[in-house]
Image 1: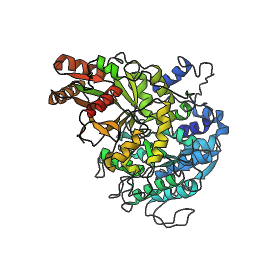
Image 2: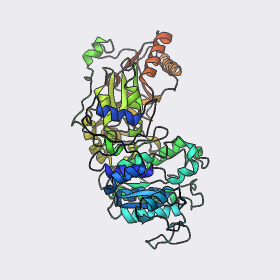
Image 3: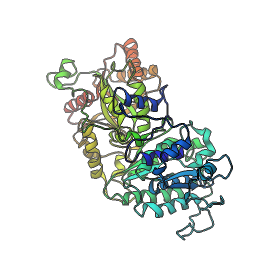
Image 4: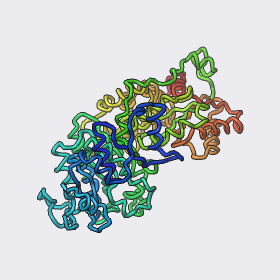
Length: 574
């Protein structure tokens, strides 16, 4: 898979030529679904000839002109597998693990197929090129005390700092250490399939711990803090190579394998690890496309990237008006909001193209879709690697499907990390973020950011709210705020997570509605990877069991619009 994904990135750089059938989720063969859609309803590939290639040798023969040779990595220094992916994109090479046994892929490629090795990341006799106790190869600098860190420092000097990598891109995917703990997560969670798009754009690959208070499980003997220092150095190099711009990082902390208590070592839980990583990258002008376990595998990103999008995708439904709200009894002639409990559904978390591409096929063919107003939180930056999923959703939207951005706009970062930056020392990137998000929101007709995920970077202030309001003027879901209101001219409401079970979710909503009885109330309800049938069941249970409560499930525009109207009645409130 590593070799095939990197080959895809090279072959598909200029045109969509090489497709893999690999991923599946929710009972759907994901890659087969999208290929069939291209050949059928959509019509993009309706008249395109498709030929199946029966084995690896036929694949390599078919696409021999796309690569110049092999890059060989060292399983004893797992980080070199990520170096191999960087080399694949920069030097047109295919990665393979060193193994002299007769049945190994290395032996097949170098022996029977006669493909030359162009880059060694291990010595030809199998001994490690990077190791503690010697100088860093080619650089002559002293070792950091970590073979892993030495390997990344070498790669930084070899490719990133020489301007050979694509600007504004990084790829944060687990290295070959997963081989030692393959059962820790699902069979696709090595996320090797995801490499193709980043290889096609010459991204720099890396995998380091964000924690500076302990040695990582994959190299516990390294000097404490070495991983984090190397991570910050890479993030700074990525920012320096893209001055004034925003950096896209594919991937997510590999919590099933490393850096968390889940991995069997370390003191930090998975969510705090996610938050610490996000806090750090935000300070270096970077966001992550969160290809997280367990839907984290995405194949064919380099192929889908060629899908011909239109210039604009307006919201499928007209924005609700005050006239409509008055007709429903939600807004009085005097502008007063009815004393009802308004619920808006934040349908998440789609901050990763892997999650989006897998969820859209089953959820947008769910017979229950359209019964309940839903705010699909599809980050617009996902159009880079899964444009067809966004296009499909917009094409098949019902009158109750609305599209908003998820966390935190056109990519997952911490808003406060754009302005308060103790780890990077860089100037504020808030204006750069506005410039990055604005055209993406405009293309997809979005004007609501459903979740400004503050995380470990601290609570957003009026400075961040005002900036987000420039591309999300119709509403902002928030993290640390106490209640709904208007901040810096934009209607806001904190999100509250619902339980996984529909019955429990209905009970939670009913309890909150009871607490607000006799008053106007608002709940911005967040749920993760739930089907339209789930939302329909929640609403049905509310009607059947709690029908005496004045609960109204409304679309996102109505939800935030009523908050704005309600706030006018309360000018003295913070």
